[in-house]
Amino acid sequence: MAKLSQDEKTILAMFSYMRPSGTPTETMFIERFLTPLGFTRDPFQNLVLTVGDKPRILWSSHVDTVHGKEGIQTLAYDGEMLTLSKGAKLNSSCLGADDTAGIWLMTEMIKANVPGVYVIHHAEENGCVGSRDLARGNPEFFADIDAAIAFDRMGYDSVITHQMGMRTASDRFALSFSMMLDDALGDGSKSKYAADDGGAYTDTNEYSHLVPECTNISVGYHSQHTRNESQHVGHLIALRNLLVKADLSTLVIARDPAQVEYAGSRGFYRGGFFGHGNWDHDDPWDNPKNYTAFPDRRSTGSMEDLVRAYPDVAANILASYGMSRNTLMDEIADMYGDAALEAV
Ligand SMILES: [Zn+2]
Image (cartoon, rainbow, N blue to C red; front, top):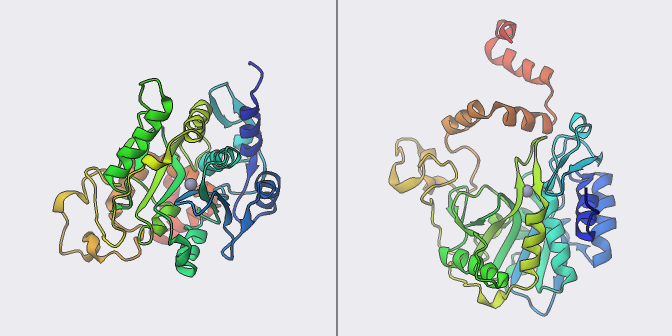
């Protein structure tokens, strides 16, 4: 394999840390890569750094990974895709590109002096703890912010407009974001980034009542939270190259954060459950108007469908949350009796 570039070396170094929230390995990572840049902790344990004078964009990622245990992992890199090494898969529950990719991007933007309030959130994987605490504990923090942009999305082309079925960014903003990247490409080609209303829950969702445009941008990882998680390194570097020269003043700010709007054309659950008024009005949970905190309970059927369709992913996620085979057997026996286990 060709000699690694400096970018690749830094990315591989960062991706080797397994960082469940609050662990010594997380602290080591922060002290090696973030403290030297000037990041400091806010009262809610988020890492914060401001570049420029009264910037109006908040850039976001999260410092924790969803690994089952902390430590250093070995990686495999073929010059394009970065994954866990075969040996590491015995020990490590995921690659942690979610969200080491977003952190690397932000450190590069800081080095290039891109203006913004940079927030690397605490304990996103434990339920957006740091962002929720910040929104509740210090809403004034967002007074001057027009857009909260997370780099915490799988794939190559999403500009998220809806998180868990609720609009958090306008279509006009999404279009302006993709056009901004197209302009930065500068050769007449297209970045392919486009509005995507199928977003899951991430930190910027916590700010959607305070900040007009709250989005999440694809950073080139796939199969997050599993042992087969991968990172397209070239995509990440290309995105960095565009962001450090993008003209942020072209972003269109259009959403009114006081207005709540549900559902997109596709929606998070893809089945059209939230689409166009086909709710079952007899079940109060089926009417999005009844949501105040957006719990995961939308449609138990669709969760089960997903597990059935992708049992390997579901099993990996359970393992990554620390559930062993024996614990799961106990749960099944509680529900269906010991006889149920004879079949497996
Ligand atoms: Zn994430």
